[in-house]
Image 1 (cartoon, rainbow, N blue to C red):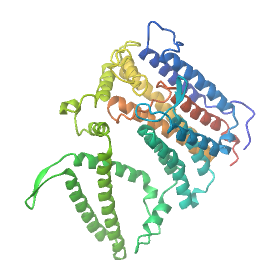
Image 2: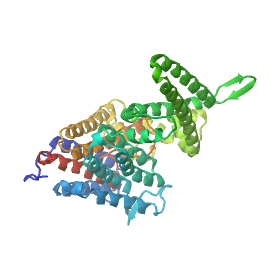
Image 3: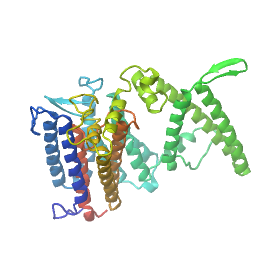
Length: 470
């Protein structure tokens, strides 16, 4: 790789500009939400807005350092970078629990969240690995190594436990799908172990996204129907169980599917049609039973949050214990109170940290004070800024000559999308409350530094894309 003589090279100024706008708006919102008239200076480090101003300054400084480093360093040292972030995830498991989770490494009065930086290490190593192989000749080793790169940090994060960050890491599977990594070799190896079955190819891996949506639909349907009991007589036996109804429905669906395949498939393929029908029945019944079992293992407050999200229960209207739906209801009330044009800057009443009407209104629910102050119009502007940022990164990804650069760029944009969609969804009642920040906006040093480093690495790689020879 040849390096450009210019420091900025082909620097993407539009992406950098929208980054600065968003962090400025975020800092202003943190200042407004936590404003203390006795400490009005934004540089009052005893207040959250003073510390946030410090984190913004540190993040910009780190971003500059990242940009000055040679771009091929990240590829050459992808394994050590990944190993350091994994090491931090291991160390944090031995730290004292905070709010029931071991997610923070403490340094005096400050702390960092290693899981935020693990996203960078994972993205760099995944990009380095996928950029070094021929994806047209992928095999079981390719799939297993890719899964290991993702599975190790995800397992450690699950041990903390940090469900929100664990969900965000699933974004990397979409990156793999985008680059053509399929699970076909692994699935074929497992399926062909069954006596009498010899498939030469399978459509499961190459249709990963449709199957994923099917699994999501099946999970939601299982929970909704399973929590809608119905009483009926079954040969004199009264049954009150929604899951029983699901089982009967799955059997009927598979029988009908088999009959249709018998009519459509040629005679020589009818055995395969039967095999597919039986495997589908085994999978769907096993999966729905697994969903029920997994749901039953959750803590009560986690179950209730899922049930509230799916509309199975309606919060306090159904007599659910106080506090279970508190965050969601108060967040939606704060967002709605902003109306069309908002109440004005520093006029938020419901979502101010002084009233504590909306808990964590400076971190997970930072969108609430912003929406209350600026209303629908301001919220639309903020959403458009994020959409512009993500669209810009997609454009950057598509113009890369290097597979490494492209994979890393898509890793950045899909992680940003996850955070953006889930965080906004939490604030307006469209997503479960799993506690992840709004990028560049929420209060927090780990999030601000990690996302800034992630973005500046992308800016550096893109600025020297024309120097890449392979």
